[in-house]
Length: 194
Image 1 (cartoon, rainbow, N blue to C red):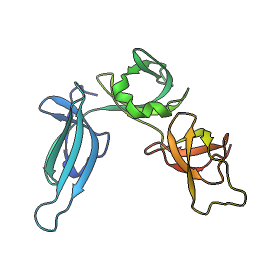
Image 2: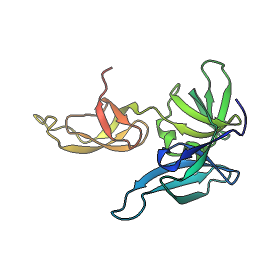
Image 3: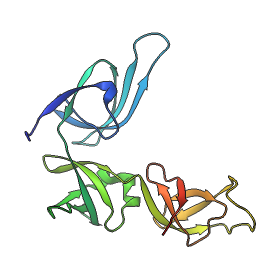
Image 4: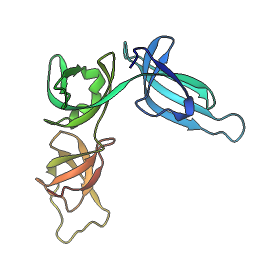
């Protein structure tokens, strides 16, 4: 693998988490929006964060334009612990450890539990992006009591999970119930099967 290797790709093929090399600086893609106006050329709107200093930028490219995608090493890591230095992860195959900054981890920190397996994107052995598993199992710590006879009829009530995140859960869910939530938005997915 060669360091600094870049690949030209169509702007429309980029996804959240892609890392771009623009004028020698690395940017991680936060969101991609392909816009197809009634008239005119379709464009791709990219919201990105510059990795070196965290500055957010937005750029528009014609969908046929190419951008330089930086070579990034993506590997699975297990979450170990967090401290004043950041969030510590270990590669389960090599036992190498890396530390990700609190800025990089951001809102994902709420879903990091002991041993959680995440995908870290590394550039020159420095973490630059984190991808959580799609779902997390959490315990309901606070919610209103269920109403007798109410089933999954579509009525939802607020609940606070063991990680402090608030979400809406079906009326039949009670305190102490383990549920599966989507890590992308914290929404209820199903009652845990364990």
